[in-house]
Length: 267
Image (cartoon, rainbow, N blue to C red):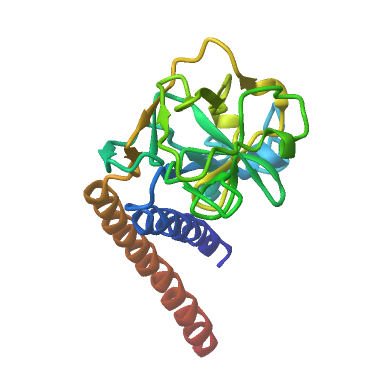
């Protein structure tokens, strides 16, 4: 019963969808989280194998010879990939001067142990060296000299000094402008690769836009997740029901196979 692979492919696809939705729901309260969606496609065996332009049966013609399905009866569901939805999350006031939310399509540039990454997770703090870091310890970078060594671009501010951060990312102390936060945008956001729940990597540096930005920094705010928990739970229920329906089809195939194996032997 080779056709059992048709519903099985659909079940595998629904399982992938369930896992993606479950991850979205789990991060519904994660600061700056961007939800993911799975894309499916129909895979036709005939498109892979190819078909003849002219179908002339080498036998006595029958009605079936004039109705070619091109393998459609064996069409399978394939996961075409997943993509991140970059819709703006709601900005929530915190009144913490080191909580920074982004209004627009930009990202903060941070330095991680594996290199420069981009994030919208703006709950920053000061470490023992007076460097502005994320809650995971990644160092916030300055917009000055973007081609310099990232270690030389780490933002350091005076300890125990009040900070005011403008919409363009400039950091003000009593002495004036101390630094400017590196906020970047991308020509193609969908070229970004997600790492974990809040970091992104661009494989092409030419994708980065540093000038004429439309993003503003909001001090004392944090951007919430763009996950709508009610919508995601609704999609999760639908995916589970589809999974169960496909399971019933697989069980039916199994019963048919069992009858064929048991009953044909009686004749």
